[in-house]
Length: 97
Image (tube, rainbow, N blue to C red):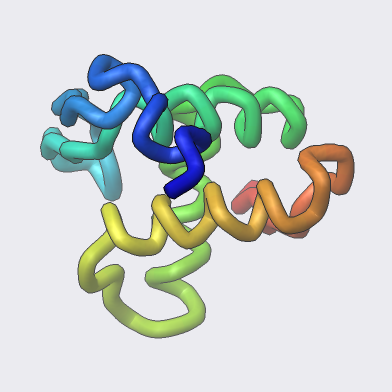
């Protein structure tokens, strides 16, 4: 088996819980450390701070779907999509005025 995956430092896939404010409510999101790092990069690519990016994405999901079920899974998928684009493409995120 290739050591590309088994050689990932354990610190990269340990979970980290962060408190965030979404839709005016304080909540917590638990993701692996590696995902938080990619989300920071993604937010920077959007010209936003991570809290602002999370809020914009959450608000957009509410607008499109009426609810944001399993937001942590959506964030993981956003990280994968960002990786698929080569991390150079700005992803379309609508920011409410």
